[in-house]
Image (cartoon, rainbow, N blue to C red; front, side, top):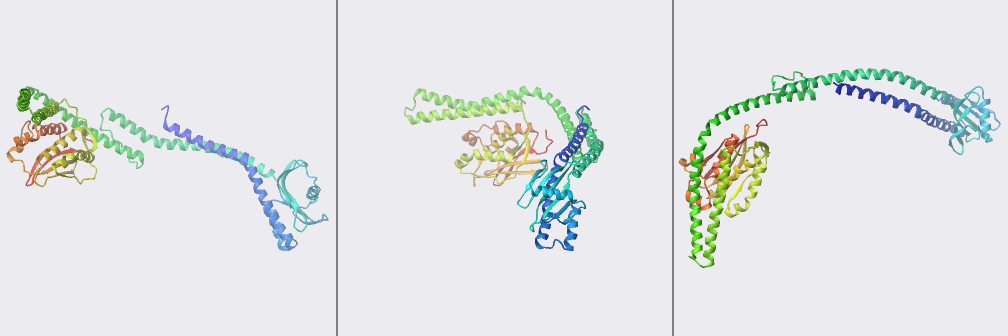
Length: 492
C-alpha cells in the first residue's frame, strides 16, 4: 500500500531516533565544553577554599594537609603552585615550577597574556582561560593570593574535554547509525505485528459489505484491536439477524398486498361513520344559526350562548376531522414511521407538565415517581400522541379519588408504559370494541366532553405500525391503559 501505516510508522520511528542522535551531537558540540568550564570553575573555587582554610589556620605544612593537597590535585587533574612573597615554593604538584611561577609574577605585575579571557574575578583571585603559545594549548586557571599572603596558581588543560567531545561525537555517529538501522528493523516488525490484524479486519469489513456474514475475526488478541474484532463479530451476527427479520417482514408485506381489495370497503365504512358523526354537530350549528337569524331571542346573553354553541360544535367537528385524517393516514400506510432511540421518561414528564392546568381544573392528582431514564426505539412524535390519548382519556373518565398514576417499568427487552385512573371500570362486553372507530361506551358522557370515539383507534393504528403490543385492564377502583416499546439496540 502506498500510504501503509507500517511504512509510516517505521519512517517516523527512524526519524525520531535520528533526530535524537543529531540533537545529542549538537549539544555535545556546543554546550559540553561550556559545561566543563563551568564545572572546572566550581572545582577551582572549592580547591581554593580548602587550601585557603589550611593557610589561614597554619596547617598548610602539616602531613595531613599534604595528603589532602595531593588528593585535590590528583583527583581534579590540576597543576598547583603556592609560593611566598620571596617566590620560594611552599607547595607544588609539578616538578617544573618555573612556568607556573612566571604566570604568578605576570599576574602580580598585571602583565597577563593578551589572549587571556577572564571568567570570574574577586578581591583575592581571578579565574581565566588562557592560551599557552609554546604548545598552542588552552588552559583554565585560577591565580591570586591566600589569606596568609602567599601567591598561588591552579590550572588544568581544556584540550582533554575537546578531545573527549570529538571522540564522543565520533562514537555517537557510529552507534547512532547502527541504532537507526536496528530501530528501523524493529519498527518494521512491530508495525507488521500491528497492521496484520488491521488488514484482517479490513478484509472482514469487505466481506460484510458483500453480505457475507460467515466471515469472523479469528485472532484471540486481548488488546484494543482484538476488542474491535470481537465487536465486528457481534455486528456481523446482529446484521445477519436483522436482515433475516427484514426478509420476514418483506414476506409479510407481500401478504398485505392481498388486503388491498378490502380498502374499498373500509372507505365506504369510513364515509358512513363520518357522515353519522358529523350529522349531529351540523344540525346543531344549523339550528342555532337559524335561531340567530330569526332573532328568537334578542337579548345579548342569548345571542352569546347561541354563538358559543356554534363555535363549540365547530371546534368539535374540526378536531374530529383532524383525528380522522390522522387515523386515515395511519391505516392506509401514508404516514412515515421514523424509528429512533429516545428517553421516554423525559417525554412523559414533558407531557404531564403540559396538562398541569387541566389537572388543576379537574382537581385531579397525577402521580409519576419514575426518575430513571428508559431508552426505547420508536417514533417519538407518534409515541407522544399515544401517551397523550391515554392521558386525555384518563382526564375525561377520572372519578372518586381523582387520581391518575403513570408507571414505566422494564420487562426483559420491553418497556411498558401504563396510565391508570380511578373511576368506573369499563364494562367487560365493551372492552373488545373500544379500539374500533367511533365506538363509545357511554355516548352521553362522550358527547359531554366532545369525544368522537377516534382517539383509541389512533392508538391502535400507531401501535400496530410499531408492531408493538397495547391493551387495557380493569381494576375494582379504575382502569389502566398500557402499551409496550422495544429497548433493544438492534431494533429497526
